[in-house]
Image 1 (cartoon, rainbow, N blue to C red):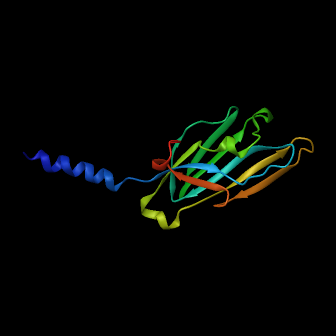
Image 2 (cartoon, one colour; image 1 turned 30 degrees about the horizontal axis):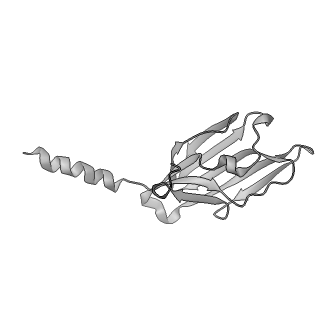
Image 3 (spheres, rainbow, N blue to C red; image 1 turned 120 degrees about the vertical axis):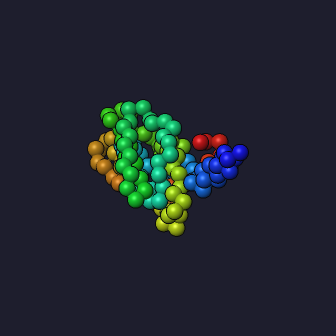
Length: 141
């Protein structure tokens, strides 16, 4: 008899802590001829890392919780360099932190390597290049 109110209270408490989940993808990133992606750094303010669905072969992954999360991924060897930013899409799922929605922001840096000249180039990523798709609206999560 005394457990019924307690049992009803638990689901309500868990609903209050729910965060929207987003899968991260990229658009509008053009590589020059012979350029490959060597690494990426993503900073997600007011988000937390929910899950990593896959990591490209020969790549490393690390994340550091800060005001949000900082995610660092990169090729271990040159053979792991990627030919397209599409290869990095749909890998990371972020959860929005409900208490700080107004400050939510995702940005990053893409590190490119040109195979013939061995030069490197950095591309800054922002809301024009980083796409967050709500998991409940897609089957990618």
